[in-house]
Image 1 (cartoon, rainbow, N blue to C red):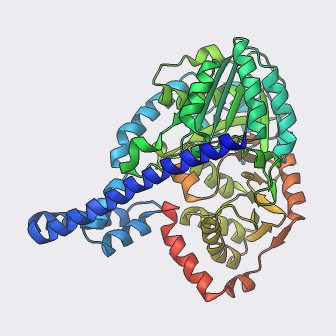
Image 2 (cartoon, helix red, strand yellow):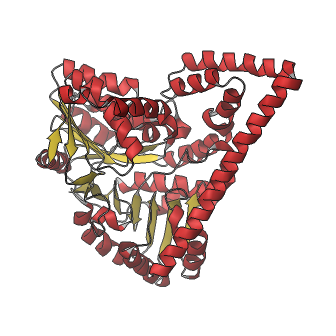
Image 3 (cartoon, helix red, strand yellow):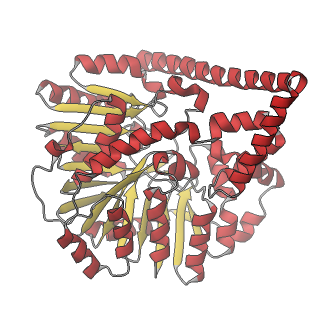
Length: 510
């Protein structure tokens, strides 16, 4: 087992080094080309400079968080910066790919019908929050009532039910994850999947190629194929090295069993997520289990990404929920990604949640790299008398992202947002709860990547017991946190401030 792990890591490092070498070669060739144009093709070089000016003008007027970064690159590196932006920063060349994904998504959504009775019921119960649900309904995500929701404050809490449901599958198991790691938990999951496939269950696994870099995807695909399990890796890195394919990753986390039971949240399929492995202290995550009608929307999200990778037409109608549950409230799964910019539901829901809060907004996120709009909306909520609190990790998984997170504290603390760091370890939970009425649990980090570059999914909950359970979990977690003081934050060492300032500028690439 250990030998296989070392071998997988070895090949992953070789693969990553090859990709990085290809990127480095790109940069060298671009630099050489720009130097050549400067010396021998002045007209073409001047045309590049003219195009650069046009791009800068567009960026200045563009409502995009990464514009500051690219303006600086283009101005600091004439000619060279424009080519880098064209390759790595512009979304124009990705329009064809985004359009294909959007077409698949629209086709899936066409089968998601909104019950007028449920929509009217929601409006009568939540007059102040109905606009959030309407926004998602207009985007093709129905709100459901016949769905039972269980909230898990930890991945450890989820594991038992998760494994039991997998073992009980009769017809299908669909799984989609950013990270799958070859540890003890995955070994047990794989044994169940192999057994289920042998029983005739349709077992599918969609993983992100970057997130599963250490898994040895090619070998795993061959092995699982022999066991009757279908596996695809989303957006293989080597296929789009020229476009900085570390962007546009599939960060969704979904398991769907027999079209009627589903899991989602922050939990990936690796040992640390259920605290079987200590990487950064105690791993605090969260997840939800849904049973009933709302699973149909998650199935549409999964099949959208699956069809994009498999290239074969899917018939979602054969995956309608097999049985009904009563449920206690309203459940509305949704998803989004870079193909939806600049009308991404991921951003839209968070913005509306903050704006609609009257009493409080409680947020847990592993990363806090906000765009100016969300930051200002949080500040405006505080200025309106709303209690805004955010929990982030004290022990981090990526030091450079933590540095950017800390640098973002200042303006929020100054204006009255209360920020806490989870001291026992790393908090990976991605929740929002407001006013004891509604909330969100899903895969969305409050950072640039989740909001603009990654494919994400989440569930909007209202008038459901899970909402108060999320709040209870937040308040209990606060007891294990230290509050960040604005005065102390201002006294950070100069060297730390300098590094944070640089990393903040570079955050679109981190």
